[in-house]
Image 1 (cartoon, rainbow, N blue to C red):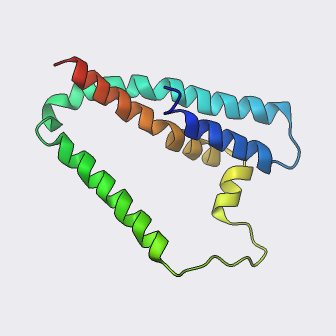
Image 2: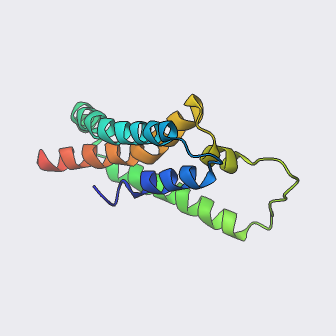
Length: 130
């Protein structure tokens, strides 16, 4: 559980470091967003795993292979790309994602950092059923 939640911890640190003026309300909001989603996603994953296990059990390993292949190919493509980022004084999307505390940004970050837990629990649920 600790290993799966380290991404939320890293994003929380990034948000704290990129905030110009630290307010207790921002820290509480980040904790509620990330903690809430870290608690909610295992529950969602468990129920989704129970509902769809019989539909994907025959080819679930191919789904995992395909997703990991896409991620790996994208990482290699980005590493070999000669495209460099230019700093023209504008805030990039990554900078905004770390510094902004708006609803949309926090929702996307909370989902992105906790969705792996739902897949982990749904996999664990299907393994324990055997």
